Image (cartoon, rainbow, N blue to C red):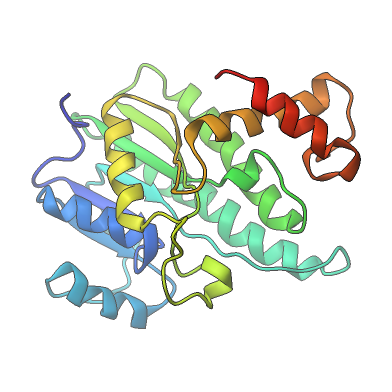
Length: 262
């Protein structure tokens, strides 16, 4: 199957959160296709370190949005993972400012640039399974990624029939700078590497898939689908929220998922 038309020599890729992890892996993928790179990250030091892994000189500059006459591939990938309690409103603000409004600002700034292009363009927005199944313990992060999912869905709908394709990238367990709060030094056996996510993204984009839900070495695509169906079932079947993690529903959830064929 032919790859997505946006991965073409001479096209320009703009990637946020690009100095490490999935963003850097996608930047390397784009560079292998001969694309020009505009890499965005909060850390100039991390961007400098990315230079050696990409194998070319990188300069850190500040650009006005009007400097970008052409953007063919826009990846809104920057994100943070914090922990906090219900009494900590700053925890919610910080996560929403980066994870949600980073996406909103990226779309409002660069969508007009993409839509000026005559050739196919693409927008990739990085979500999270936590924004779909909503596991306990990090409400602000989960809420930010649920909102990102909704934004991506609306953008995909509004751009249907246009030359700009939209994709929601939902990584599985991936070894990045956020793994274990940044404390894990070696990739766990169950995790994918960022390069695997980048390759899976390219494959699914070539198939015109919107929801790019990545498996990992522990969780299969089938298990992901069963978990998502159970979560929606909380609403349909009038169960209490987050029932999969409640002691009184754990056995029922496991039995139900074992019987499902998806």
